[in-house]
Length: 379
Ligand SMILES: Cc1ncc(COP(=O)(O)O)c(C=O)c1O
Image 1 (cartoon, protein in one colour):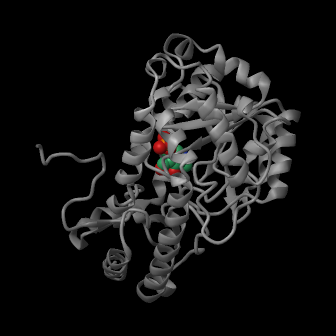
Image 2 (cartoon, helix red, strand yellow):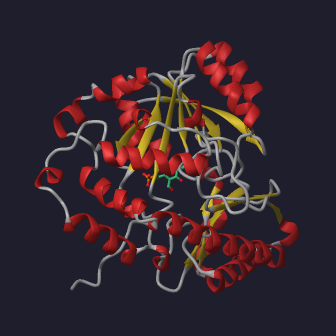
């Protein structure tokens, strides 16, 4: 067997690289998947290996809707859900269906850096709006909307990547109003919505899908396993009709039919729910470990908010610190992070950096932050 199995961006041996935004191996549930897959395959009918319905297997959509009713605390109907191969694929798909090269997409500053590349693939023009601890600055958005006519707006409303903050309920409501007033699509990347550690964030934008031009993207990547490539879009009947009319699903059917059967069994057996509970507990302890270590080793040199969900700490340094430069020296200290500049569409945020606590246990978190402290102090 090859020992070369790896993933893009894997850390060098011996390095504790907090730039890696993927779960550690101990959190990837092989046994859970074996049980769910066995449960499915034992009674599988041949038709389940045929093409699936464009929107997704109806039994999966019903199970998913019930799971989201519990998770979101509001009603979710199977009719509002559409199966995807995860949020990256969903974002690319949405761009393909609803935009043309030269259209404008509004994003947050900072925003998820890999989304920039998807927008670039579609020739979109990116305009950014700053965020504060309540999410996107909606007054600034409104000013921008008076001069720019965006086709869509991309937001990460809950436990933002990289900022960690959640958009307030009031701003969510105002954003939906603005989307109707100025006629643009809101693409809400709700990948961390269910990954809260103490208290749920404000209601997902998906729960307002009936009222506005909303496409809410959800995924099993952060609550089960990224390798499943399974997610969903929650939207209104009008936008659903456009999704169902796409060439790709007309040709290939549901984007991830086979995996949706297995995940349906994982939910019906209660395994997904237990996994999510366990993840919350593990990540809550890691947040505590990283916060304590940062206070000890970085202390007054940076400021941050302790995240209440998601994967990330977002550190702000004084303007004199250039984290892009710092990143070049991080290898010598066997540590790593994502420099703030990656999350800006205009080369800004150079005095910020992002740390993920998903890829390392508490002992490595303490050691990696100690190394980071040495790197920062030796500037
Ligand atoms: C904000 C955001 N969107 C999308 C993704 C990728 O989602 P998926 O694995 O469902 O494609 C990530 C993963 O890091 C993310 O942080």
